[in-house]
Amino acid sequence: MTLAFLCPGQGGQQPGMFDRLAASAAAAPMLQVLAQLLGAAPATLAADPDRFRNAIAQPLVCAAALGHWLALRDHLPPPRVVAGYSAGELAAHAVAGSLEPAQCLQLAIDRAATMDAAAPADGGLLAVIGLERAVIDVLCRDHGVFVAIVNGDDHVVLGGQRPALDALQAAAESRGARSVPLPVSVPAHTPLLASAAAAFAQRLAVTELHAPRTRLLAGIDGRSVVTVEQVRRSLAKQIEQTVQWQTVMQQAVEHGARVFLELGPGSALSRRARELHPQLQARSVEEFHTLEGVLEWVEAACARA
Image (cartoon, rainbow, N blue to C red):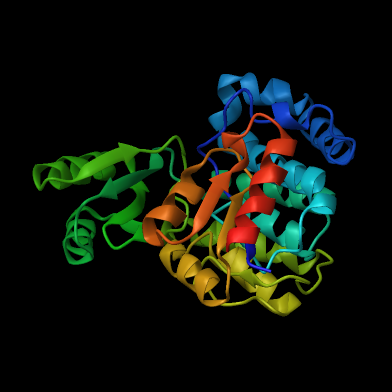
């Protein structure tokens, strides 16, 4: 089978992100767990401006991806590959069988807490598009900023403290780049969060995990995660280490994935899949009004692949 699931990170939260799941009996227990953990219904949290706050955003995006997977999994072919972007890598592990949905939500809360505790007060992320990597590396050295995520040859996300990011943004735009500050308040995937990575590693060390039952690609290098120790290491290291998303996508294609379904929220990953590999068929659940529409597209796309 050629199907791949993509679990996005934070940034795509929006008020209707749980609408397709309102009548799903399969997703309901997991959404009830999230409501108990965070003290409010997921749909209420998604409509609140606080949905971009790290402590809410990370469990929220994991719940959206898991909810759509739970609602769809009995009607879809098993995926060839699963991958998750930033916080979404936790959801990807739940999809792949490394941990249970309730564990995933609690770990997302714990991950956010360790990151918030370690992050500088003025930290954040900045997307920069249109500059060669050599130029980006010089700008990062000049401004004390780090490459957090590599999305493509000329598309990166940088992490650091806001004054440094603002200065780099001006320098990048003066060179013709397009830049977008992201609604994330921590410099994720940079050495500034080394202590958070260590703390989360300790949390994972006492969590009962399993080897993935489906091929799962680690965000830090695109390699298949096949043991429990690799699960623990890759999930902890990606907090302080660059996410190589371009490599993840290349590896997914090399492992035979041709149809990519992004489990939401947002559609950035499916759009990026089409940009990197125009031959792929890639859509997000958020492009459909109903779960039935998602299933019809996947069936047709897999038949064509």
